[in-house]
Length: 321
Image (cartoon, rainbow, N blue to C red; front, side, top):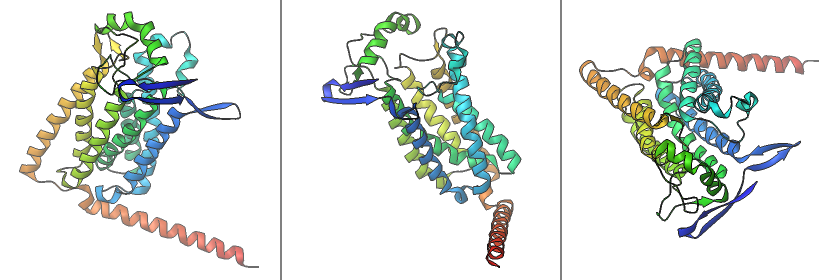
């Protein structure tokens, strides 16, 4: 379905279509492509900085692979649990994620859980990897939010600001859900007026957060601090942005994501303050500076050298008559 997204006061108009192309009758949607592109950028960035954080690339690849799987599962399960009324009569719809329906908090929980288990199995220290993951999450979220733009979702209440946006889909949804939105949030919406582009706010907030953490990372005080800063930064921004949205996941009169965002911010600030005080008193040795990490790197290089030697021997044997 083709629609137009309008920014009336800016005089901007964009024609969007959810489907990018079809392969053998299967529609590939822009939402998925954008999410995948953000993931690729995040992985590329993180793997360029593995040694700086005490992360072995081979072991990290396994953890990242499982983390991606866990992230998708967690994001979908979280959304389904918080929107059960949409799925209770059509269980097959739980597996249809082409058009969206992924919740970031569930994604983070799933990625950390699956990635952490894999790190334990592969004997990779988890906290240094989390530091990289925090910056990777910000890259992925900043890019991925543009999937919401294409789907014309993750928008907010009415606004008179110059960058207010609208579309036929947005107006239609607000017309249908106006009474429900008022009952849940106490917010009156006018389907004929522009709304806050909350996807854009969050994309810009995540991009700024990535830049700040990228610059700060070399000054971190302990393994895991950058990830805690990610949790705090994202929580702070989401706490305010979620308050503007009209499609929040609700439990009673509470916006679930807004409450979680506030708790994440407070928890991150508290833990960082505690750890910095502890480091100041006791000192701290980063995992990247330990003999254990040096041994892991030597082991990885020896395995790679052995693999190359075996491949060379096999190649030479095939050349013999």
